[in-house]
Amino acid sequence: MKTIGLLGGMSWESTAEYYRLLNVLTRERLGGLHSTRCVLYSVDFAEIERLQVAGDWRRAGEVLAEAARSLEAAGADLLLICTNTMHKVADQVAEAVSVPLLHLADTTAQAVLAAGLGKVGLLGTAFTMEQDFYRDRLAGHGLEVILPDGAGRAEVHRVIYEELCLGIVRTQSRDAYRAVIADLVAAGAEGIVLGCTEIELLIGPEHSPVPVFATTSLHARAAVDAALAP
View (cartoon, one colour):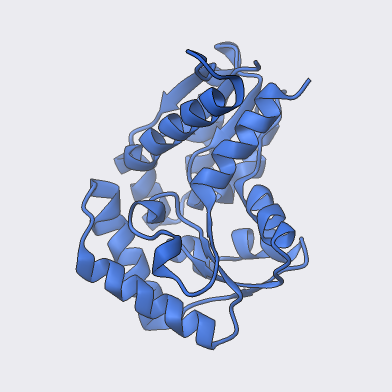
């Protein structure tokens, strides 16, 4: 098995889920006492969040690029950025190392296409929903992306940073997300991309009238597939 390098800590709540999923999936594939070969570099999310708010993506990319070089030096054969939002600097990270970076938006788009869908609603941080780095990556696979309205985007973003990143899961927030999902479906969304790694702590398939695409789970599965490939 190849060694998976995890760029995590953004937030550690979802990074912990990455670690759990990778090991569950490896055990399913290999059986017995098998677990995932991986190395983790967990950054201080408070530092990254300050750079996000300041719009200093270049510096944020430098922090993750340096972490990526550390993972490669530690023996990683492939890398995951364990957050959708920080794929804003995916190219900067990929250029810093010689091992492949498994892009989360690509694995998500492939899953949507495999389900036979072409139009999806996108939930995520305001950065992911409102900037073009993620939407364009999905669109590059031929997908049409629908966003919540302004109030919906603000509430989705607020819940991520003020609750989910702190490990807080509230029923009223789930209800708010379900209302946003209902609006996206009414606008024509055939599926919903949970485009923030923390959203899976709040929303599952049972909370949506259309298929949901859980990006953390999809990313972890793609990583195990790559790590176990001949």
